[in-house]
Length: 263
Image (tube, rainbow, N blue to C red; front, side, top):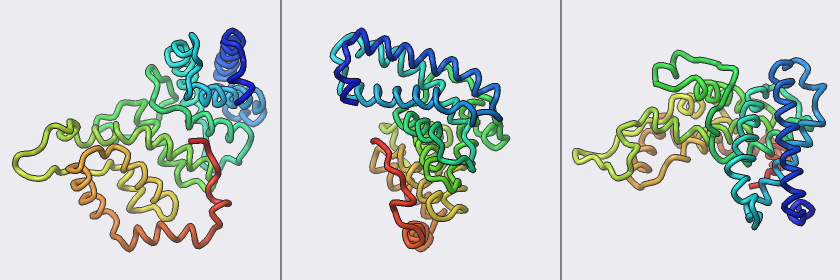
């Protein structure tokens, strides 16, 4: 990152334009030739790695015109493709160079980009709840990935569920999306999103813990905390939560289970 932060604004702008061009060109190949993704590893992996490095520099600011260009062009343009590539991950994928760099890049996507185009996966259950096709696709895919044995794949799914969790909360608790709207007749009634409900109550070990972690993201007020915890308690008794929390720790050393990712 040090070499990148010391580049002149003109050179860094040139490098990031190259990264955008590379990712954009690789996108069509990866989307249309999913079966041969393994043969196209190095180029998109290097581009993703450079994106993540630039994203880390952006946290402290570029102190030049890139402070405007990064959030308005570079970040949303690349984020759309990175989220699309997330949907190409499979639960049984190995930890290849492309998988590692894709997960690293995905962790720098802090909100879902607009104008997403995905190969859609639809679910009647989510359709009845009013989810649009893009959000259905991301929820379904994340649910399938979070039970992976590969910790990189699990963390990618967790990050996506955390991005989706506020939307899922609003979608299924429309009455209480406004923190200022407090019920005069009693405490709020809050439901846990169906997908997270299923993972918390039916999965075991890390997937259940990660789903619980994602479910906590939208909580912003004391009233919601109380109502939400009441909803969660009906899904997972304390003994089950403790069992899910400690069973992975007893079976696997932490350094084998949890990879180190940038914050």
